[in-house]
Length: 326
Image (cartoon, rainbow, N blue to C red; front, side, top):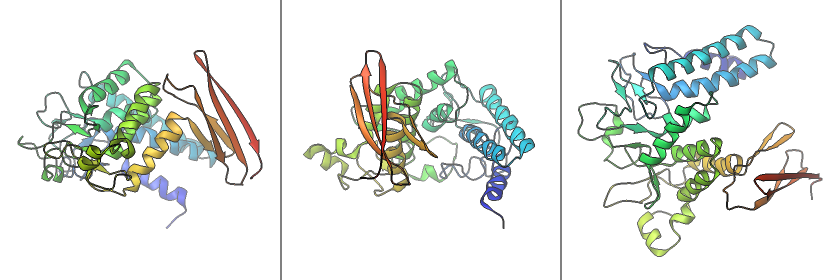
């Protein structure tokens, strides 16, 4: 037993391990639990978890700062830098980042793989982790957009090509038909991350295009779209299929993880509204075609902040006005 901070400290110590490439062990799955045999032998490593661990360690270091745990905070920041160095030295594949290493050290998510050649989240989290930006970051996001996004069929795939016939066995993800769910379909949770990453990278146009692509209301704007989606036309699906004859068909609906991330992507990444404590931060990454927007943010104490963002030449003018609860 322990308080919340102690549980966080133990989770960090338990989860951010180190394998032969200096990256966290993937065990029987990381975010993608379908990759449950990549590291089942205890030696496989997750490149995505390297990025995620970088973000977690820096966040945990800030909590330690507040508690006066200076040595622990310094150790977390040092470990984060080690993770970043390991990802850069061990996981760059030439045009994007690998996804993982199997127990025997073979790469997953490499141009050398005939299946699972590129994975979205290893690219998105190169940005979302908050790690220093490099030319590789831009190239990795560009590769994800080029190879994983099908603008015509409104799909942002988790990975490609799907797992099917190659001898590699990443886990039960291979039990899904090619193009279904995590196995090469759109997994909307990850698609929202890609949209957020493009916004963080400063590309408001592409971020909004991806948001629009994912939005179920856009997907079902006509009768043909409703017939293709085949689930509730007003509901975000956790997954959308990508292979004929089911291209564009929705899978598991009412999935709160995907809807929450897409909501946050629109609100925080594109509109740039983020309430942290008593401070409202406004950092918009708007499409070039937008003249601006107006919004009202309600604080927990009931007061409201009216925000107006207007384009003024190449710059955005931001005005805030606080008022009591109406």
